[in-house]
Length: 154
Image 1 (cartoon, rainbow, N blue to C red):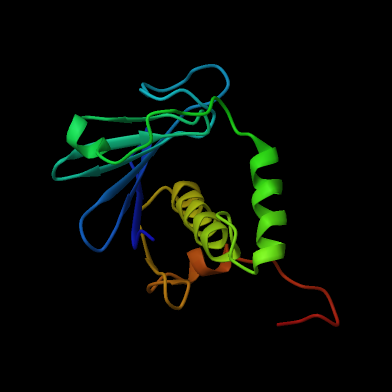
Image 2: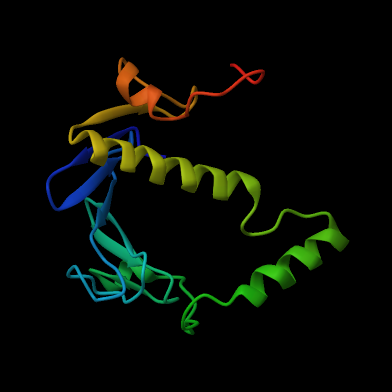
């Protein structure tokens, strides 16, 4: 999970501890952005050897062929929810974790929410993925939850 997020007016750049960048730019139903991969929620990972883009379209595009070594040749157009249902039902029988298990989806959602908080604040934020708190930023931490009414006070 990225540890730093910064909004630059056009993109939100998430930086992993190892230097890899996660670039989130405007994109949507009207074709905004300059993405190579179609879809409503594309993402680009950038590193020293180039970049890789993926989205809910099912295809992956990379800046060099070597970055796609080992990728399946066939892609699925769009998100097929029946595959998630089939995977879940199979995992009920086998007791294995589904592809979209709680760890994977939780971390993905946290990264998106942290990026959105940095975007709303309009500044760089530092995030500790272990404690799941912002580093030295009480204003950002307050945006992680809402006030609770009694008797459910934290």
